[in-house]
Length: 326
Ligand code: GLV
Image 1 (cartoon, rainbow, N blue to C red):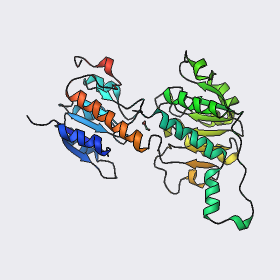
Image 2: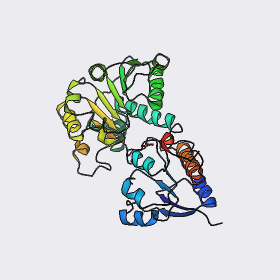
Image 3: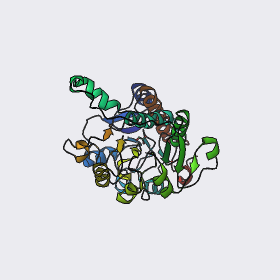
């Protein structure tokens, strides 16, 4: 029996890739530049499985061009590049990787807060540039114990960030589309968005990107924050109006920002964000550890293989809208 055709966009950790190779015939796009759309459409024309990354827009056009497609999987928890309605319309289950990256992403979010608060990377620059002789020109950081952390988007990662913040002696408040019934267990107090903006000494953004959250943080929102506030984004770049953030950092509307995601992403060398001294940016590394990326790759392959066999995916975003696959 011939192996099913699977298109893989981007890299996969070796154990997962080898497992996939045992069962499937693979066409993989490994180049650093994004796959040109015409090549992608040509490749998916006879594919039964597709693994994408967030550089690929999965939409009606792609699904129309892929009549044999039985499953799509992505090695990420976010799926703002995927038109879920269209996947459901074409009866194609879409699998993501929730759960396995929770602690790792929470660690990164909290690391950004700690590194900013204690000016770790400025300190390292100071040492590397051998600036000791120039006198002590490093600006002081701030304590986080006793401060209020506002978490926007209280899912699993938000709860894991709250746990870390409590251990560091912070008060935790949060805003979410829906109040969580277990928030007393998490130790976080629900607040309106407006109150959170007003009260928080540091804000960590973890909300998914959707129509409702695109541009959630703009001029008005930065104006409502404390001038001493730290703003940390670990969700998606377009949740923040970048021009408004640059302005808020330039004018002292807020004190500092730390971003693992940006809009645009990547950030061009001459972008205004890179001219600021009160910012720390990492290149979208929320889940980037060996253990977590290995687990994400395995879950992605679990999802893909299940879909090829018409079985329920281990983690399926549109399970309830798929007909006759269970
Ligand atoms: C990373 O950004 C993810 O969505 O997993």
